Structures are given as structure tokens and as C-alpha cells.
Length: 579
Image (tube, rainbow, N blue to C red):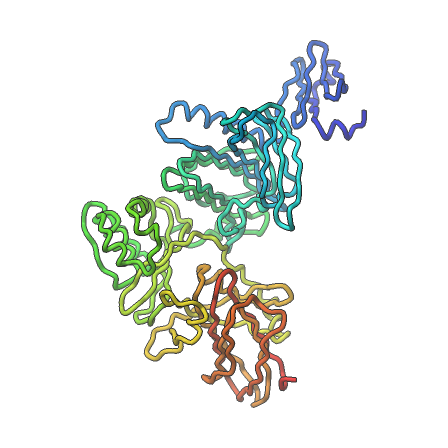
């Protein structure tokens, strides 16, 4: 028998005191099975299992994976709860995640029905994202055989073999272990574990209705737990590491987001002093006042008051909730910028009423008094009792009124701005890195190719434009990418404006290299110098524009349109004329 054969199928753990007590232990392979035998008993150790031998005790068998072991315990907890619960539970979901400095592993309980007409012990998942090093266990803790067939560069088919047959109509019940980044848990592709500013976030979502979820997060060494968007039902430690367990029932509206926020001193040197201001009450006075107004007005609406005012984004939000709570379908539809089929259903108003009682206002950026047509403005929403931003509600300005547009989850993590040294290096290579952004702007039923020639915001006179800093991030070989898709809420069929300054010591010819996704107009010192109305990703070769820089400060402004998916720009300044 080769030692590696034992490692592949089972693990034997010998307590240190065993030898001291003189208990004889023999390990052998009989008919392809690992057998752990003492003077009083013997046990077979199946694949994925481990035998623990303690002094003067018979061997005990458990799972050779602590994440799976935790998931099995939570499964038993769920099964016991289902027997005594009045909830309508159509499905269950369990995630046990462990974050280390170099990877994040997760054990996920999942179940699929056997929709065939015959019993089988093989579950086939025909079209799944490729999951590296996937391991699957049954509910007895045994390791299952997994056959993988690659279909293309991103997808594969998996056949999972169980030791027992599953009858027609019954469910395959399994626990998969994999890297969380390889599993599409988060709509929109947000990593399950990522950093925003000083905080790290561990997050997942289950959008199945009437599903009972248990999430257990084993945090890194020295982690400081800051907040969660759900009630924490237990905290304990695993190997000295803080562990947080959260229970969530998704209910009729599949309310399945689960997020925790933490600091990681051992990884980035953060301390309690780095907790963001909002977590200890240091919010902008104007935002505090607006949040208090929202809470006061919403309490009156929930008590039966009717509210109708669309002069500001915040008042429009209250109008939408009032319409839903009072079942005023006409007011609700009139307050929407676009009407989707589900918004005309009575059931959608019920769902909005549900969220009105769940959400609170977290942050309200100042809106321009006269932003012009099509300007899109955000209000950031959190769950009551939490300060973690969960949703962005967008509003569109039109003819003096604001209209509710879309609610977006935090599908895209914010940009981690590059450091001063990287910015200096980018500038040395000619990249323009000091930008401000305005927008986004949109027009009802107008595509990006139509928005291209419609003057918006900065192109109009007597319009209040909200300019704010626009960070850069690397993209491939380019060190100064302007990721509009992340900064501007991940919208489609929109336009945004970017501006910067170029200081020249003399009047001289130069050339701009402009890469955009999608179309672009460029103005230098108020004069249109380039325009291309197109749908594209960031091109390999730039649009090259010959310009003349005046002595002193030159003002460059871009209008960048967006079709779908990614959205951004890169600008590089080269000396001399275009070849």
C-alpha cells in the first residue's frame, strides 16, 4: 500500500497521548478500504472521512473537512427548524466560508430534484461555470466522485456520483467545496470577498423565494467585525478566529442578500481608528437632516398619510413608497421614468411596500438645483439597523420633476484608486490622470447613438453641473483607465462628461490618443476637435487627434456614450504632430 493512496481517500488522526497509553493501533487496506483497528474495535474510513483515535476510546469517524463538518451541523439545524416552523420553506441554502490571505474557500449545501423516471446515483450539471478543484460530499460526509467535461473556456459539465440511489421526485443533497471567486454567487459578478476603502466585505446572495439560509463566515486572523446587513445569531471562534453566523429567510420576494463588513489589521494595517465616519455617527449634517426628514415622513406614510411631491429625489422616493403603501397605482406609474412590464402588476406594488418597511436612507449626495434634462442622481439605501450600503436608487430629472428610474444592487465594487507613485508614473508616460466626471445623463427611449448628438448637462447654458473627482485604475497595459461603469452605477444607454486641464509652457502642436468604450466627442478650449459615434470596447489602437496647445492652461472635455456592459475612457498626450 502506498502512503499517497491513504491521503487520497482517508485521513487517520492520532491523538498524541495514544502512544503514551500504549494502545495498539493498526492501519491497513482491506478490499480497497482503509481500516483503523484498535484492540477493541475496527472502523472503515471512507473517502472524505477521517478517523480520530483518542486514548482508551474507540475510533470516531468524522468529515475530513471542517467547512463541510460545519455545513452538516447547520443542515441538521435547518431540518430541525423546518419541522417546527410555520414558514413556507421551499428550499434551503447553506454557505460556510473561510477567508485566508491568499484564498477564500466555501462549503455550499445545494440540492437538485431527480426529475427522471428512474432512480439514479448520478447527478449531472450540464452547463456550469468552471470551478477549479471542486470537491463534493454527500450528507454522510463521504467524498463523491466528480467527472468534469470542459465545454468551452468558461463552462463545463459535471457528473457527480453518489454512493446511494436517489428516487424520482426526491432530491440530490450535496455539499460542494470550492474557491468562492469561482462560483457565481453574486449577481453582476461582484467578488464574494473584496475591499472597499479600509473595509473588507464578505457577501453572498440567494435569490430563491421562500428559502431558509444559514451563512457562517470564518474570518481571517485579527479581523475586526464592523457591521452586517442581517441579524447575527451567533459568534464563536474557529482555531482562534472570529466566526459569525447569520440566519436569513428570503420570503416571498427573495430577499437574500447577506453582507458583513470588517477590518483586517494583519493584512493592511488598519485599526479601529480606520472605521469609516458613518459607523460612529459622523455624517454630513445635510445628509443627517435629509435622513431624519425621510424617516419622519415615511413613519407618517406608514400610518396612513398620502404623500405626493417630486421636486427632489428624496421626495420622489417618498412619493413612490406612498403610492405603493396606499395602493395608488396611477401615482406609482406616473412617478416612474420608464415602465417595465412587472411594474404594472399589483404584485409589484406589494413588493415595493415590503421594501419601504425594510430600507433606510444611508447617503444622499447633494443634487443640482437645475441639472437639466436627463440627469441621473443616486440615493444610497441600507437595511434598517445596518450602515452597509445595499442598494442604489436612481432618479432622473425631467422638466422640473424627478422620476424614479431603477434600483441597483451593489453589483460593482468601487474603484480602488492607484497610489501617488503610480499616478506620477502614468503622467510621465503621457497619460492624463487628473479628471472630474459629470453625469450620467439619459433620455427616455434614446439609445447611445442618439444621445451622442443631444446636448446634455455641460453642453447647455444655465445648467447646474455636479462635477466630482474621477479616479483612475489600471487596465491592461494602460495605467490610467477611467472606469465610468463602476463610478456611474453600471448604467446602459447613457452619456457622461469628463474634464481635465493640460498646462503647456508654450504654444505647440501635440496629439491626443483617445481610447473610449463607446462613442466620444472631445472639446479642447471649447472647440470640438474629435467626434466618433460608435459602439465598441476599448480599442487596441486609439483615435489620434492633432491639436494645438496654447500657452498656459488648456481645458479638455470629453462626452463618452455607453451602449451596454463596460464603459470608460483612456487619454494620452503625445508631443508633436500626427504622423
